[in-house]
Amino acid sequence: MKKIKNLFNSNRDLAAGYSDWHEILSDSIVSADQLSTFLPVNNKEVKKTAIKFPMRINPYYLSLISKKGDPIWKQAVPDIHEIDSPLGSKDPLMEEVQSPVPNLTHRYPDRVLFMISNKCGMYCRFCLRKRKVGLDSVVTEDTIRQGIEYIRKTRTIHDVILSGGDPLLLEDDTINTILKQVRKAPHVKIIRIHTRVPCIIPQRVTTQLANIIKKFHPIFINTHFNHPDEITNEAGKACAILADAGIPLGCQTVLLKGINDDPTVMKYLMKKLLMVRVKPYYIHHCDPVKGACHFGTSVKCGINIIKALRGHISGMCVPQYMIDLPGGGGKVPILPEYVKNIKNGIMKIENYRGETFEYPITGVIKI
Ligand SMILES: *Cc1c(COP(=O)(O)O)cnc(C)c1O
Ligand code: SF4
Image (tube, rainbow, N blue to C red; front, side, top):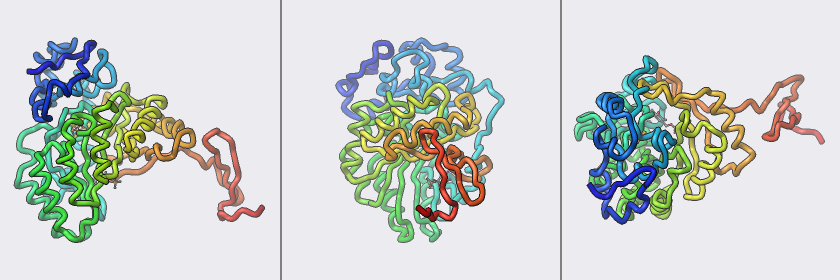
């Protein structure tokens, strides 16, 4: 192991110790015994939890932890609540039921979610796909082949979302091959890549990678930051490489108890994202996933966050707050009630400052 110091003495000069992202990844902490030499954890509890849900904390992400139980720690360190709660379901969104071929979910008419990797730069404790990520032989060459075949023969698919796990943890050549094959389908108009790499292991984003991706434009990347402390110089650099390659960047944040369930934290996160050229896309309400229910918040909490954003800060950094309906019902936006009531054709509308205005429902104002 290289010099992965940690906590309370975090080694933020990581780049000096590593020349390549593979090295950072292979220096990841994967066992409780290892972890307890770096962080003051309950070894027994971590061990028990990590048997059920794999752990991987790479030295870069480890270096962001600045105290016990902080928002970075909570996303990375196994917690006994993952295994001691009866709540939640393995696959609350019924992704498996809506899969015509393994690892591809076709829920909406014009787009599919295609899982091409089940490895990640870290195993996030709140992950929606805890049932799959980090487990061997979930994604294979054969499932990828079947997915591509399905995309090619299904002409209604206009938008392919490459997801995981993390697609960008695949090697450059593999990414190139998959993108090339997906692009061969003339009906596929846009490709999206869903990745936590810019946040979790930004060193993986190289100019070489960006040069591969940009050959297949229009490609969009939605990344995933949950806390302002994740937007470091390294992360900013990764986003710059992608943005400079003409790849529009979005962010899908998950609303998580004890991590970002606070309007001030979210406001700062959204503003910081825009500064690294990432446009906030969604804030996801935390799904009732087995092993992640302790991260759940109330819906009111999400609504209050949107209220605190809309009108108060640039509209460019206001995402939609989405709830994914259990049972595969899909995502719906949840908004604060701006329309207070409608009477005799007149809407009473409240603005961001809480002032009330009237507007005719016909949309025609006589002045
Ligand atoms: C979220 C999701 C999508 C993409 O939804 P958008 O609202 O277009 O971003 C597509 N398929 C599945 C199964 C999803 O869960
Ligand atoms: S990177 Fe994404 S898919 Fe992987 S564990 Fe984290 S949230 Fe889940």
